[in-house]
Image (cartoon, rainbow, N blue to C red; front, top):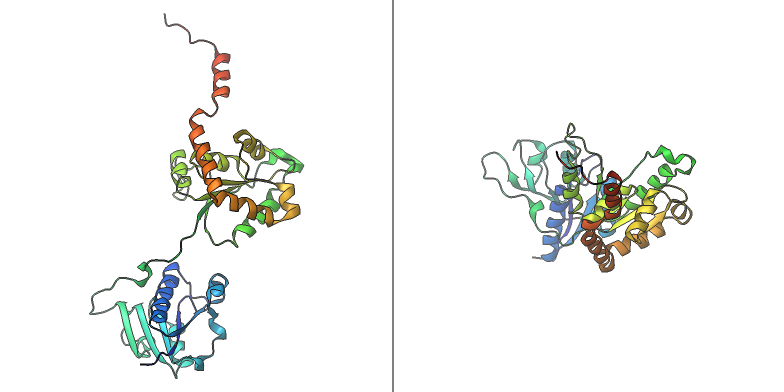
Length: 310
């Protein structure tokens, strides 16, 4: 049997399809299998998903020529709704298959329009495991981001808004898993950490921290995680002071960043991800138990000896 040209699509292809990570992983699993079988396979994405996956060979769904494919495969999600029904009209000359989908109503035209449906679940059949569980080939770093927008005490030296925009614009373009984090604790809000230990538990599992907050830097080093510290205060504030106290080199000042742009962030981030950056963070973690001894000793001396009990 000769190979055919195949287009692989799904909810990650259509406009406003609310694509999920599961949709994308399932779609790529199908494409990988068909390519290994010798077929010529294209992936088509929605405008939003194409921003991330287009460089990996995907097309924009709206730009696809319907007559160019002998087979169209719809992957994942519920097999219902107008976007699915439109596939049958747009690709009327192609053989159409749905795989890894949920079938709610077998008589729905969205379902009956396919030549073959291989469901993951549906009426009268045993459920199958979802295709998104197939192993991913490449991993990405998990980066925690701590930003501050306050610190009014710095007055005219504040560059927080412009620095924040520069940092978020830069990190938004990186191929990393980003977690927006906060050092603030509040047990009344389930979205916030309730204790300091919970914050540390998250930080310890990160690959890198990017922070404009002093404690974002300190907690990262305490946990042995490399931190890219960005000081949002012109002339340097407490973030720069803390970096000096630790001898931590991955520091970018507000004026440097605003004058030279993301190239500085790229350089320091690359060092944080390197073996040298990880080793330096591990050394900082090992030194953490002795941190603050001078301050605590000065406090103890100021208070004097403990009064004897009568």
